[in-house]
Image (cartoon, rainbow, N blue to C red):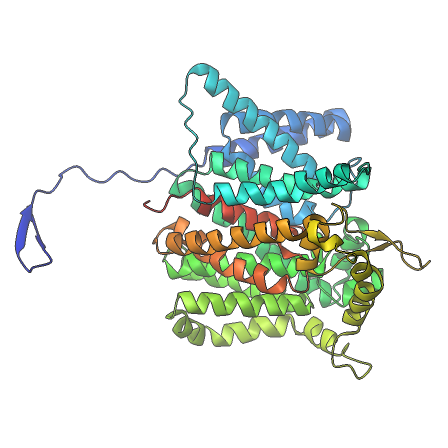
Length: 476
């Protein structure tokens, strides 16, 4: 018997179940199968060459994912920071490697799901609190811009259709996570599939900005992106080939890691080993918007967890050490304030693009219902080919007008409300809720200058967080 105390102070005896609580099974099966598939692919490379190895590896990956669908999420997230920065047509025609990998993983998961459905497994999809506003936002981001072109008598071009694919990819990833990540063990593995590669990304950023020759030479092979080789020494572009994408990625991973540590779900040693390169990577990104993102996310985490302040004070010496590791890029970036305007020179270029190309394009009330899905414009100069719209809220108006902007606001209200409820949980789902609540504040504030919601790599993490948090009902 055990004695509990009621709200009125009355002791009540309750029977104790003598059966010990079952231990949580660690789902190492997908990891073992993936490792076996990698060994077999290596043997195929020796016998059949690179093309044959890719075919064999793809087939084995489909089989592994069909047997263990959650492995698709782990494989995609572990490889995401290292594949997403490789441009289209470099390794695979018309696609980035991470996009092709996601298509393969989705095929495997769908095959396994269909076979289980034929076998008679029960399928009972249910609507969750975020599903309707998210679906509306997706439709306004994809179907509405294309339909508005057709209603105006314009034929959507290839660039218009390609422009809606990123949001479609993110939704496919969200559905995959929702369908496969179901248990606390899955979520714990998911946290590590996010934080460990992000820590490696932070190390790469530090080594890159420190001028370590092998790292810089490696990045120049496949991860140069649209930048100049000399720029690799100034900012941490890493294997995402973008300093802003790198910065957002490590900041979002750091928020999740801290949320797990505050719940005692990550050991102190792992928290320090991963936290140091993540903090250093945020500095080494050399991006003003990254430091603003870190400030917003940090403030949101402190607001949620007031005892985080004491932990931060105890870890202050280590945080200073991590900041010093990324300081070269930070100082180099600060030196770029110039011309007497008190802002980075790159921001002057942004303002010129805005006033010369985009504000006139939104004129004549075109901002009401949108201009078109593709906001990238051809450049009239010879020194550049394309011009990008680097203001998040104007991006919404350009693509879908006021309907899309209102859809984003409606989605944001529901995300804040539901993420805060889930963040009250003491488990891994609660950690995702806490990280999403802080990350969405970052999206809301930093969209004044950049479109962070669908940013390379970081957008994937945001939709993974949405999938985990949105898959939890309020009463669970």
